Image 1 (cartoon, helix red, strand yellow):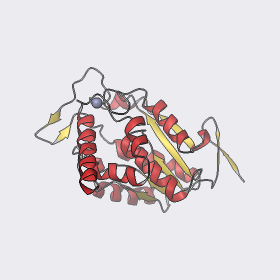
Image 2 (tube, helix red, strand yellow):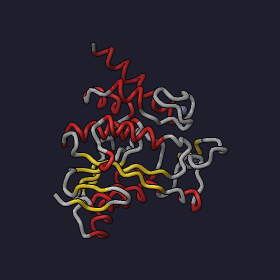
Image 3 (cartoon, helix red, strand yellow):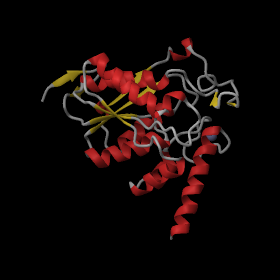
Length: 237
Ligand SMILES: [Zn+2]
């Protein structure tokens, strides 16, 4: 098998079937669990971005979770985008900024302009170098916070652009696109990882793993969905 040089380590060409854009949060962990079910342990690569996000331990959390799902270190690329905060401003990148929802735009000030486009571009470059064409991202337009680059129309447009940019046939898969947070919890339950996701993932803007701080916009959305899913599940039992 060919061994291709990576940035600092090696990857085995043709060893994986997909690349998951992976943050270690609820959504991308659910996507990773589904990818491992669909493609098999050892057949999934991950890419994680360090871009000055508030929860600085996000990368360490992502590394632990990926390892738990059988993603080897050489299959998990950590990409340093420390410069991101130099060209944009976002409450997500500024520990001193309050996180608020702008009622005029329905867009919270935690949005990071261009983030998913940048992430998908880098993920596609990484994937192509490993002979992989399937990209999986946990973006979601339902029950979401109004981020423009989480919309299905953007993802489809980006997919076309990536194909044109690299003369490739990438397939960007978004398993959560139209799921509410409650439905994403239901998916985690069907995949057998409900408790794991609840206890080990990091979505809290204040950096608290699992249940989170309970008050930031991300925690409120996550817990509302969790409660709705559990109520629905109990109602069916
Ligand atoms: Zn929180």
